[in-house]
Every structure is written in structure tokens, then in C-alpha cells.
Image (cartoon, rainbow, N blue to C red; front, side, top):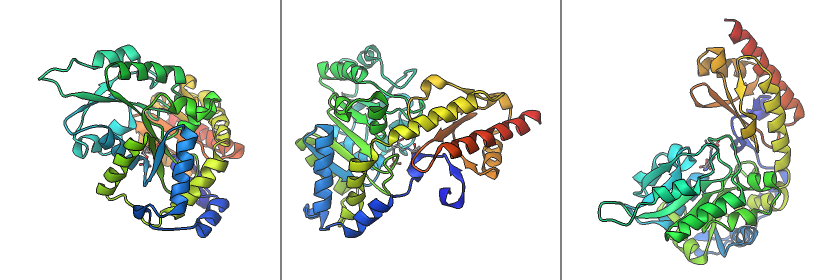
Length: 351
Ligand code: TLP
């Protein structure tokens, strides 16, 4: 949509590869990755492990596959997994955690996406013949449905300690963990170190066309490699994907800060509009979620009017619209989006 002149704020997944990525893909040295013979994949996996301060890494096709592979490599069927109630794994991954991994999700609510360690503790029931065995605690960082909120190292540490004390593993859906690191101005290792395993996405703010990476101990990644294979995710000359990932890790992380500045600009512009409410406190990275209940119109009417004015957005719940900034969204696009939202709110507010 962006290339058709739209300001596409539906997701950072819409980003296209950079010229440098396309060049790197064109010239990537390739081999059969199921035989572990793709040098470019091997290099990306080594880089990713090193970057996260973990022993090993595995390139997978998507964030959803990364989460499923990680769940299945961390648990056995019939076990219980503790998740934040708004987590992506629970909401948007087609129920794979139950349908495929055979797990019982046990939800813990939070106000900003960070699990309260006491609530996690309370969710871990004693080992008893009546209860499924709890084995895994999951966090999401940044937290998507909470508005791209950041979970700090301290918060992660507190939850990690509870998990460890009860013999549970600790996993982080770090689809946008580099956004969290940039927002907190910390090395991403500071976030990764509290989780036993995690994943991050190449195909979001980092602009790659495809791919996510699962990271953890060598043992865990060995299991994950087998699980990826059974899920049909063993790829052959996957160096074409990995080549873009290498460019992303080398060149694309620091620029995420620009997306955060633009999200804030967007939120501040929208917050002034009548009939629209933005919780500015949640605007911590590259997302803005705003409430349009004050306009009294159906979501699809709002979204289609916005699209007529050249701006694409999504809703994540009734009356709740999400905007995501990313590479290709500049100051002028933010201004265009704010103006379009103002016009639509004005027109619909008068009806
Ligand atoms: N999120 C997408 C959509 O699925 C909603 C988006 O546009 O935000 N974990 C988190 C925290 C995510 O936000 C996503 C993607 C995933 C996992 C899954 O990644 P993909 O889309 O690569 O399967």
C-alpha cells in the first residue's frame, strides 16, 4: 500500500527490504540448510546467538512459527503454560498452542503487559494429581496488545526468579525486543539474559522480507531444529532469507528509535482531537492505540473513511484503532495521518 501512495500504518510487517538487503540476498552464498550447509544461515544464527548472549539460534519462517517451535521445545503435551492475558500467542496464533502444542493456557492479567511476579506465583499451583503440570512462563516484549509497551530488565528478572524457584522455564516472545532495547537504551542482552529462551522477528521493524529467530541454549535449539522440521519449516537454500537478516542485525537496529519518535508525534497529534482518546503512557515504542468510542461510529466506517484519505490502520478490539510506525514513515507521513484522522473524526463526529 505504501508504494501506492498510502500511509500504511497497519503494521511494521509491511516494510519492504532495503536495497542493501536485496543486494545481499542476490549475492548470498547458499547451501542446503537441512544439512546445515548454508553458510549464510549459519552466520546469521551465530550472529543472533552472540547478539542475545545465548549459546545457539535457529532461523524460522515467521514469528508464529518461532513461538510454536519454542512452546513445543519447552514443554510436553498436556502441560500448562502461563501467559499474559493479552499475549499474541493466545490471541493471534490460531490457537496453535492448544491445537498443535497440546498446552493449556493459563492467563494472568496485567495493566501494561508486564506480569506481576506475585500473580505468576499465585498461578503456579502445587503439583497435584488433579492439575496439569505447569512448565513454562511466557512474556511478550514489547507487548503488542498493550500498545507496544516495554518490559524492563528488572521486571523480567522478577518473573524469571519466580519461574526458576518453581522449576518452570521462562520464554520471551521478543518479536519486537529490539524496540524494547532501543527504547530502554540498554543492550538487548540485558533483556535476553533473564529468559531461558526467546525469539525475535526480522520481518517487522527490522525490515526483512521473511523470518524470525529462536534463541537459547544449544540443547534447546537442537530440539527446536527437530520441531521446526516436523512443522515443515526445514528450509533449504534459506541463505536468501538469512542474508537480509544479517543486514538487519548490522544496520537496522539503531534506526528503530526514529519509529518511536514518530509514534510519539502521532500520538500527541491525535490526542488533541475531539472524540478520540489516546493513552499516551502506553506509547513507549512504535505503536499508538487510540479509542474512537467518543465518535459513536462503527470501526469499519472509521477505517474505510481513513483509507479514502490515504491512511491505512487496523482495529484490535471494538473502538480501538492501532497505528504502527516503521521504516518509510517519516515526519510528513505522520502529519498526513494526523490530518486525515482529524478530518475523519470531524466529519463523523458531526453526523
Ligand atoms: N504481529 C502482527 C499481527 O499478527 C497482529 C502485527 O501486525 O503486530 N509475536 C508478536 C508480539 C507479534 O506482534 C507477532 C506479529 C507475532 C508474534 C507473529 O509474527 P508473524 O506475523 O511473523 O507470524
